[in-house]
Length: 366
Image (cartoon, rainbow, N blue to C red; front, side):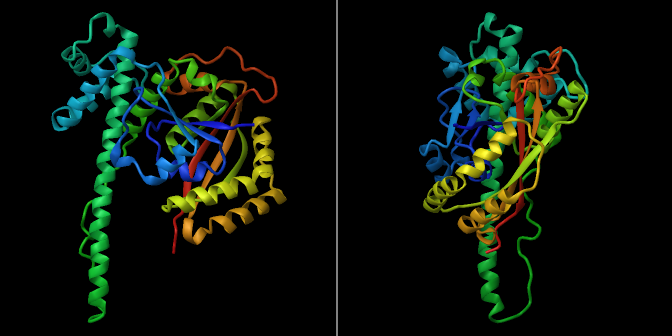
């Protein structure tokens, strides 16, 4: 069986998610804010390109804009080029207009979004309540991509400075044993705030659940690197059902692999060697089987260490739990949009959604 998983609330493929998860899933699906997007060059890498070419990753644009795509593209470019003018205002307006998980309020379009849409010739008909919310969701997600690109550029620049420092210190140590840091006081990338995470989760859900076709080809796996997103889904299911999600297991995975050729070769070998182990593991997930330790754990760890030694590739871990009786769309709506939950949960075996959280355990040491 071809097991697919939807990654949320990410809209751009990343090595952090792809490198570990392609070892488990045949296809990882990302939802984009707009169809035929040119992507974010700052966030792209040869490894990502190779994995997409391998068919391990697919992008899908829910509720495509069609003839309005060019208007949206121009709007994003305007924001990108005038980010100092729009950035803070847009964030404040969006936060004010998007209901909080803990502070439900009536959803309205921000005045800034209305002004931006009007400036690009969007008609009054197109600015009805639902369409306006979808445009706002797209803008929030694109603004998040711009923020991520800025942070990645800053991270790379800081790393280049630190690399130069290490080379200089190596030369100095030949003459003197004194150690010091030239870059110790350099600032790091700006942290992602809870408000930003909340905005993305809500915007991603608003856009994705609008399109029924987005879920037809994707089964019951929802994966995230966001602890907040994972816990919110789990808490929502517990509130709806009166019981906690079923802890169905976890898998240890490689965290890093910057060499493209090695990544593709080793991933193919690993997926082939663990084919039966993964089939049994997925069967347990689909049947909401409680996590149990067994000899397959040792076999998995042995195959992983043989092809992706922890010292070189580090370790990530993906933790799964099952929410039986509710679809992915229903759970997302209830968790992030405040929509009413299903009247009653379906009781048939295996019906539901499996959610997973990916977290890094350790980085490469060699």
